[in-house]
Image (cartoon, rainbow, N blue to C red; front, side):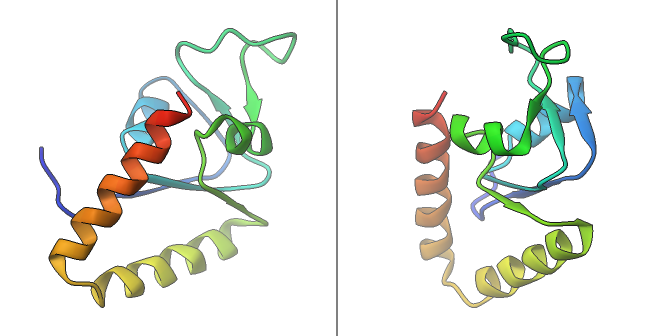
Length: 107
């Protein structure tokens, strides 16, 4: 599926398996600061069976932004949606390409 606009994923709680694969397919991932992620290929270094915190995921480039709680996350998503609606489709494609490049450079 070729989507020309950036796809924003949201994460709250603990995510692993197929949910994690779906989130990693997004161009930008916003999650709450209390979220825990379990990437399928992650070999944790002493953590709780491969779980990484939202803050660690930011450092690793898996997450673009963390917010305090679910309400803030939904507000952030609303702001992003409004910003994307005001962009030209060619600009959105360039934003998507840049986001995708930044994510892949961290992997």
